[in-house]
Length: 158
Image (cartoon, helix red, strand yellow):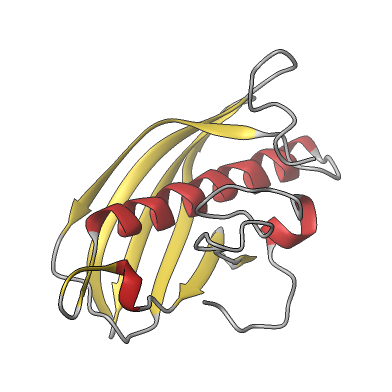
């Protein structure tokens, strides 16, 4: 888990979120902490024993959850900034894909970056990279869309 004292975007804008990947209020979740960077968002995460697929290596589903949630927040913050709003819109994943390029080791800090490659009024395409020990372990891309009143996820960050 991230130990940086700077409040994450999740803690700032969705402190009551119960999302497994990024919800600060989910005590059993991954509780990722995404922070602003020069090109988007960046997060650090140190996996623990329960995140393994086999001894010493992280489960692909955990990798997917890290990248999905981080990509979603990268999109939300970019949409907020572009609209010059004080709160990000609630965004959901329309689609995402990841490529597992090498086994991701246990016991190493993982660094995930998210960078918007295309921004429209209500959606963003985000490129994501997961690294361990200065090696790319996974890459991905996702489309994240802002939802409106009436969508089941609309109030999930409140």
